[in-house]
Length: 116
Length: 112
Image (cartoon, rainbow over all chains, first blue to last red; front, side, top):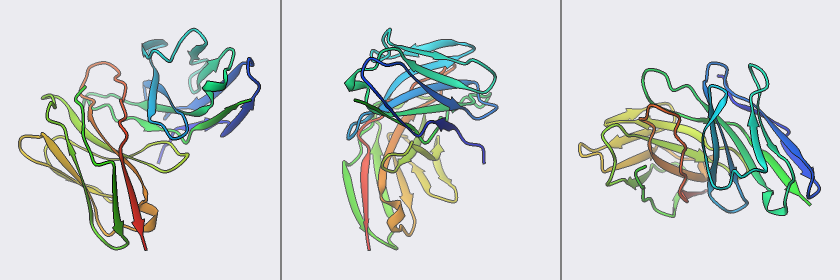
């Protein structure tokens, strides 16, 4: 069964450093998403991406964040200058959104980001 | 996006059937009902999705009454490994990419 994969599983960085989180969505999916979950809190939407541009973004997704689909398979989330409060699990998701018009999103296992 | 209400937590025992009910009074005509499961430190996992009546797969059943203002996720013969948070979500019937707004979910604890 196809699945979303994410690397690395755990990333430790110093405050102020740049990090890039990587995702490989399911191959025939067209819509891509990033969510995050701070320990003990709800899963929060960050951004959705389609046709090489951002479809929607939340208040959390400020100028420090960017997304990119550098090739036909990878989808990345970059945080330019990490802050302590960026420590969280980051989940990538993808959906197909075919003619059936349901938007079932499939999530990856997550990257645990720890900012020291 | 329609708001959902579900119990904060539930307890049950191995081998029992567990039913988690979700209220979504403002569901729109083109909305689907989707349930996800999340284990600690893992991504939400799609369980089941339906529009009306009953849907069954190898993991669960989803019961949706005619007015679609609520739905019930039924897990048959639960085991310890079913201990997780379960999210009821309504939406997904849009023509453009739609974000998922997660609530707090129902924390299901299964005891031996």
